[in-house]
Image 1: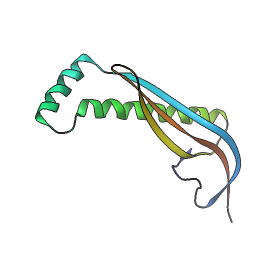
Image 2 (image 1 turned 90 degrees about the horizontal axis):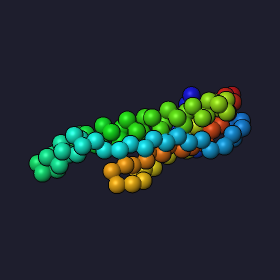
Image 3 (image 1 turned 45 degrees about the vertical axis):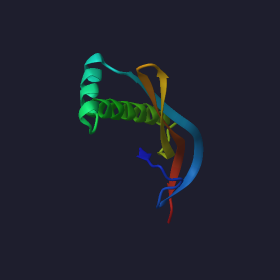
Image 4 (image 1 turned 90 degrees about the vertical axis):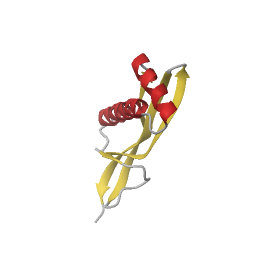
Length: 107
């Protein structure tokens, strides 16, 4: 499965547009992570615990988007975007979305 943020794929032509596909993951903070994050915030620098949590949420959202594209028998997902939002205190949603397409090689 080809996943790109662009509207086209070099060497291929879009044969069919199958529609929007998406995947999301909602993650909540862990009390242990919060304590470490507060300590890191005092000292300054990257809050590694939250960086790791968001990276895991992004990968899970991407995997779920790809699964949806596979059910449509897509060859690729173009115009992929990520979005995050807070759904409640201490929990955030990571959303991945794009357009599922079938491809045809150009000559």
